Image (cartoon, rainbow, N blue to C red; front, top):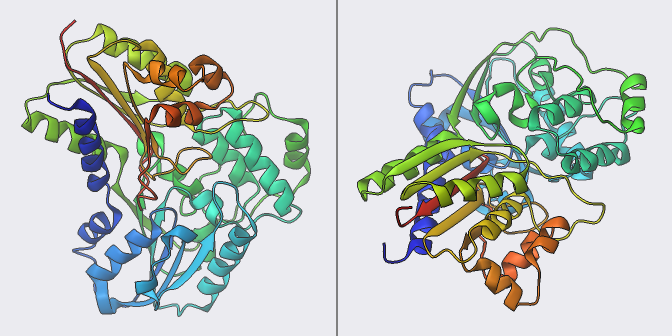
Length: 404
């Protein structure tokens, strides 16, 4: 293979194209029944999903509300109502977005079929907190969750405990109208109740036990619960894009180029430990392609540096493959954002550690300080895509170019 790094970047593009939300939504709506429709799109992929719905349903759509990051605003779609929210921490705009959903649904004509387009990121982008849950408390809770190392399902259970929008809250707000939900999945196992904290999924998750701060336990014990009344509406739900679609596309493309798929596994657990484990698997395994999909977690120090879970994973892997000329690894957040950076992830090889040290940094120290992004930037190994418009969790593509 002439240029393995370029090959991995090309496979990255193939993966992102497979999860492009506009095309996926349009395909899912080919047989949608006739009649007037109102579209509500929420999440990082909301703009692309809404564009796909308009391409498929055209004049059927009478109202459109899109709630997404400000970077997703599309000036060419001025006739839509666009409300920006905040991410990764909910902010004042997130509260305004939640209020916009509530008032918009209240004003809709009852005969309009409601088409809800959901994607990851919706948990923070729009929020209707229970009484007593102030913005400051909401931000403190989410800040703690993002640094806690908890899995996404435990995080969503805590978020939903204090929300009138999550875990079926949107379905309750919809009243008696008919609802269809199309979803882009960014959660392990494609559990619909976990996507954007399940606004169309009235399933009450158990409060997670374990190491929770006293102030969070206090809020749990003293703030009112969101409504648990059954929703009058019933939603037909369907996932239209998922992590597996991205990995399938890479595997198919590699097979067409006679690159053997050696392994395909779930991506989970601590980012640093997972990166080391994947690198050892590459070191000891056969020549070919290694694919992983899902989401890892990171326990952050009190004052973290620059980076995110994919950069932590990539730097940990780089330490394990230092000096090797036959192993390459790409770790990517498919939404184009990794942690507190504007980078999507990183692409490392056997020379990454040496390049970092040549720049005056120590890889192990950067890992301990959650400063992997600074180290990888110094090596020239960060990947910057900008917001991709989709969100199907994280992918890792490993390539070994020689036999053991």
